[in-house]
Length: 293
Image 1 (spheres, rainbow, N blue to C red):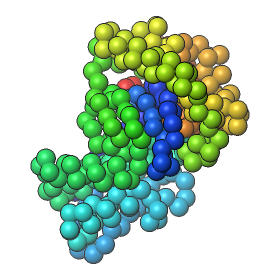
Image 2 (image 1 turned 180 degrees about the vertical axis):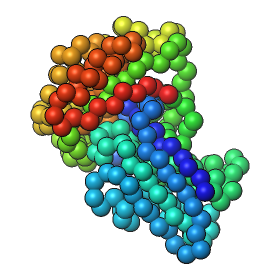
Image 3 (image 1 turned 90 degrees about the vertical axis):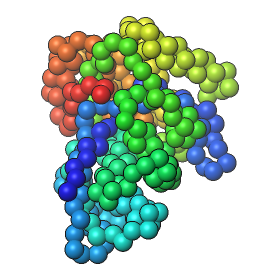
Image 4 (image 1 turned 135 degrees about the vertical axis):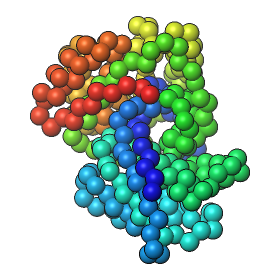
C-alpha cells in the first residue's frame, strides 16, 4: 500500500500570449505549490482492473472520466502491466477552483502507481512526464518536487525556481461556484502584443525579486492573471470574493488559474489569520489558510 499527497497550486502570474494551432494557448505563468491537498491511497488487489473510490467532493467523481482513472489507464498501457489495483482518492481541494486539484491528483496517481509497481529510473521518469503532459497542461508541474516553477508553452515547459527568505502565508477563498477552463478561454480576448510584452517584463522583474529576497512589497504590484478579464465580469461571486479580500485588509489578492478561487499573500501569520477569519464569516465560502511549500 502507498499513500501520496496531491498538493494544490496557485498561479502568482499568468499571461496568455496567443492561441496555438493545436487549440491550446501559449502561456507564461508562475506556479506556486501550496499545503492544501488531496490524498491518494494505492493497493494492489487480486481482482483484475482499476477500481477508483472517491471520498468527498461533488457526486460523480468516481467514474471513468476522472483524470485519476485516465492516468491509471495510461500508466498501465505505457508500461505494459496488467492492472489489478484499488485507488482511493480523499478529495479536499475544491473542483473547478483554479487550484489544479485534478491535475495534481493525476500526477499523484502516476507517482503512486510507479512506486507501487517498482517503476523507477531516468527512462521511466521521462515516460511518466510524457504521460503527464498528455493528461493536461498543469500535470507536469505536479510531477516536480518543487514549490515554485515558471511555465511556458501550454504550461508544460518548466523551470524550477529558488526563493530567498520565508515563504508567505496564503489565504485561499473558494466562493462556492466552480469555473471551468473551457468556458473561460471561450470568453478570453487576448491582450495586444505591446501589452503582452509589458506583462512578460513584469514577470521577469517578479522572478528577480523572488530570487533576491523573497516576496516583498513591490512584488504585489507585479502579480497578474490575464484570465481575470474573462472571469470577473461574468462571475460576480469571484469578483466579490476578490473585492472582499481587499476590504478585509489584503495587500495583494489575485484569482488563481481560471478561477474561481482567489487568494491573498501575507508575510505575517497574524494578518493571515485575521483575513481567514473575516472571509470565513461569509456564507458559502470555503477558506483555507496555508503556505507555499
